[in-house]
Each structure stands twice: as structure tokens, then as C-alpha cells.
Image (cartoon, rainbow, N blue to C red):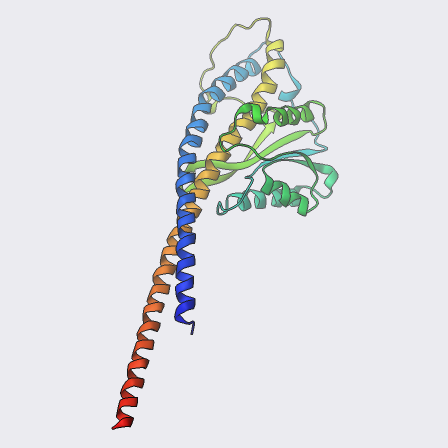
Length: 287
């Protein structure tokens, strides 16, 4: 049985850990509020851009673009969004497990795919398993701006335009609520399904100079915006997952402190009882 000093030391260290996890929970909660607002405020922009692109692509205008056409797949690109650090529950492991499983099922050789990874945890995961990383970016802010990822987003879209890859998929955690995040697979390119949900009637637009020129500019921007939107969604999920993980850690630390305190009181009571017994025995021996 542990000594009183050992138990008291464990109680003290657990209380200090509990203070840290509580502070991290509060910080993540604060970051989550802003990240959730960023993700939601970006949705109207994406919906309007999707509407314009769908209006051109589905109209009888004769406008055409390589990003709207499927082609024989020789190489697949995977954009994977993770965090730069852990302590976020299953946030990173869920998406990485999903991507790794898909790669193992679809491909027989590393020549058949390439990974574009956002986040240090994902980068380290793929490097450890000798999975080819075409592009990577780490050290993003908790509330990233589009300028922070514009370069890698543009380069990734160019990989498809230059036929370095023939299709692009994104994997990230979709934010549902503070306690629920869902690993999501989204086909980024080619843009074969861009009609708004529900099949509602599209707004009619007049284009200047013409539809083809608009598509040449708008489609790459649209694809880059999809990446940014997924990143905002992933950041909200990250902060929510970390807040939940730290709350669980704080609760577990509290339960451990209660258990250790009970053990400490029992051990102290046993020690006092033993000392009393020894005094009584000694007094009886002197009579």
C-alpha cells in the first residue's frame, strides 16, 4: 500500500494537471466561438459562387472547362486536413484512419496517388508510413485567413489543371456541434456535381465578357474556396474536439482526486488506529 506521502503527492500533481486541462478547455471554448462564426459566415459566399458556376455549367451556353469534365484516372490526389498538435481526442486519428484505409483499398502502388497535407500531425503520420507527400503546410493560425493557404490551394488546383493528378478528394472533420464532428470525404475535382441541393431553379445571369472567360477565372477560385471552406470547418471541429477532450480530462482528474483523497483518509485513519493500538498495548504491558 502506498504511503501517506506518496498519496498526497499524487493528489497535488493531479490537482495541478486539472488546473491545466481546465484552462485549456476554456481557451478552446473561446477559440471555438470565433471559429464557428468564421465557418458559418463563409457559407453564403460559397453558396452564391456555387450558384453562379452551376448557372453557367448547366446552361445551354456552350461554355466548357476541363475542371468540369471527368477523365481517365491515372493518379489520385488526397487533400487531408489535420491539426498541428494533439490533445484533441480522436480528431486527428479518425480522419487519418479513414484516409489510410481508403488509400490501402484503392491503390497498389505509391505511383497511383499523392497526398497534400495540412497540419503537422498528418504530415508526421504519412512520413512515418512512407506515403508520398506532394505538398504540405503547417503552423496555420487558429483562425486562418485565405491568404494563409492561398498558395497551397492554388498549387493543388494547378496539379489537376496540369494533369499531374486526374481527380482530387478532400478529407476533413465536418463540424456538426460542439460534441459531434464527422469525418467527411468530398470530391473536389473534377466538378461534376455542382448543382445546388434540391434542384431549385437557377438564377439567370448576364456575363461580360462571356461565359468561357468567366469560367476560366471563377472555377479555380471556386475550387480554392472549397479547400478554404473545408479548412474553416476543420478548425471549428478541432477546437470543439479539444474542448471536449480537455473537459473529459478535467472530469477524470476530479474523479481521481476524490478516489485518492478517500484512499488518503483511509490510510491516515489506519495509521492513527495502529498508533492508538500500540499506545494501548504499551500501557497494558507496563501495568
